Length: 102
Image (tube, rainbow, N blue to C red):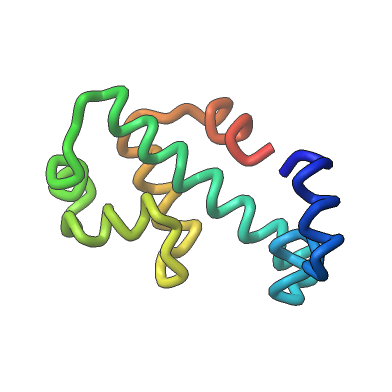
């Protein structure tokens, strides 16, 4: 959010802050959420780069299309382990994964 908009909102009584502040997340929890989101977004990017549908990826990892959709949206029921395994199944290298999580 730009500073002008932020100042206008604060002038009207709104408080601007981070998602972590709003949710009351610790630094560790906020980092975990950011990590999961990065992996989820990279999964979608990698799948699309390979011109695969969610259904095709689901078959590759022996799962369902709805589960892949949840992975790509960083659903809370999805583990980082499943995201990593799916990315590896798509051919992601260790260095790609390291860049994604850093």
